[in-house]
Length: 341
Image 1 (cartoon, rainbow, N blue to C red):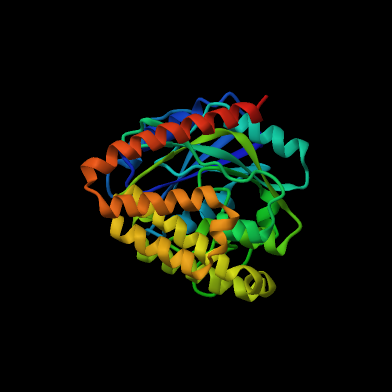
Image 2: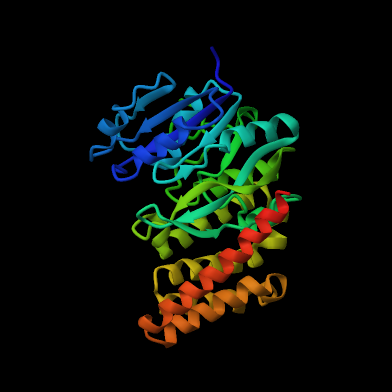
């Protein structure tokens, strides 16, 4: 029987997290899915942990060599049978109602190609932090996606398979005999590169759900904490986008780069690297002062946190950080509650 949803989960050296991720899928209150686990040649015991699950909906697909996250997602798409494709990184997790909510959203809105949810942050140990990603949810065009990436992370979207079919390509270097969807030459920024290509080159639209149905793990040891590589990968994405959306880049590139630098400043703040945070936020404001006007609250908060972290001892900064997170989390919870009424 063909499932409604194919859940695609790349796995590589995530023994500490993978059981939680799998369990969050198997515990969904929507049951018509297959779970495709793509083992990208894990060298720890991630694979053996996956093999302890006996649910018949779970299928393990093994790569012969390590190919990276984009290639693992492509393998999952090629094997997927479902009408909708849901992606879950194996160090994240889902709320039990996630698939049910996205299926209802996509069934009701046939023009939506990418449905995403807000995300709730959890720390490295999996503790909920009661703060959330709060992106724009509707009326998202390519310029907004380029500047702010409202999807937020690779575990938030559920996408029509038909949408991927419209942006499929064959790579001369990577997987030359197979259709690709994510660009396998990217080791970072592969998700935003794909979302932008969909929105900029097709008629499909993107829309988000107000509820935080994705649990996103803050992992300072992961790819996102390597600032220089992340910026270089983003610049590679921009270079590629100039080829298929030159007018978009002509009008939005500088502002998009400023928002990316602001994002990296926030990442540096999370890693308690005040010097790097100050450098990034200063570069962002120099490149495009308009981000202070367009998103004054978020930009000012980033600027203030960066300089506080840079100027005062960490022992004094951390209580301020905790108080700030508490206040922000309360405001975000109230907004989410109001939007869901």
